Image 1 (tube, helix red, strand yellow):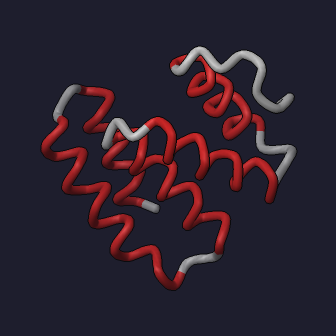
Image 2 (image 1 turned 90 degrees about the horizontal axis):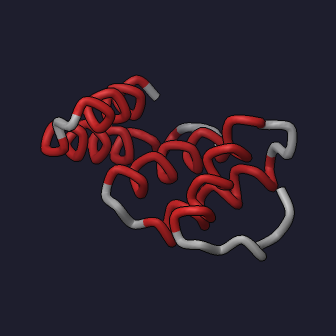
Length: 91
């Protein structure tokens, strides 16, 4: 999870190359993690790689597994907004 959070920080600061490297490292190391953490790392990775449809898919899985996760719901709503998909499933 640490590499994923580091990647998010780099991404927020505009260091896209470093963000991609840290995110890829997080994905590589996520094999032995619990399913929900894998989904979160995959979702963050897809956001960093600008793959919005894959990010939406990963956040949907994350939200289904933990419907009380407000951060996942909020991020998913933001991704729906990016692709102008206002009619998607209710959050």
